[in-house]
Image (cartoon, rainbow, N blue to C red; front, side, top):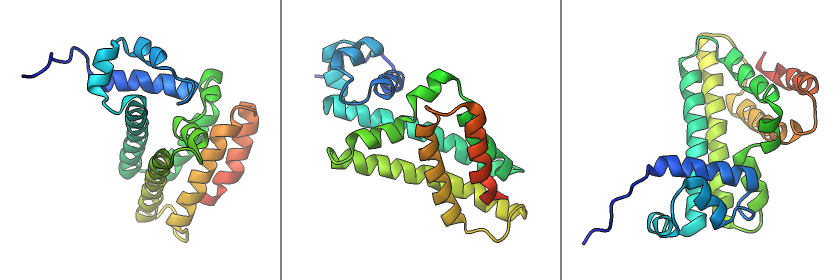
Length: 192
């Protein structure tokens, strides 16, 4: 006999839970925090997420990364100036409002929090970061196809950009917009 139908949009509640995890971290986010943000009861929570808080956390991470990466890949693969779009992506991070800066990056925060404690989550966050690196590579290869850049190793530069993105996710909490933009100008010179 089937149970009661869900009266909520699972994608919506995963996104709401993701905001809690992003703000508080995995360990600090209590089940009560999550239930309140999602607007569902314990029964619905455990029926929907049999793996509990950890399953919800992983789904929230995947959803967040998927939205980020798919949008970036689509934009870069269709861009007439992918180098300018890559630079804009980074400068937008530097120009974010203070609340956004203080939150940091959900993926990088999760990797740092779970490092050495949860191998499965470390592997997941590593995969998600590699997906972002692949998105950067799409932009570089598109620029090569358009003739915007030539003698550039797309794999190496995309790793550099991932490293820059991770560093920026932390350092944007302590530097002014002006300082961040100066740092980016130096680091993004590799793109031409």
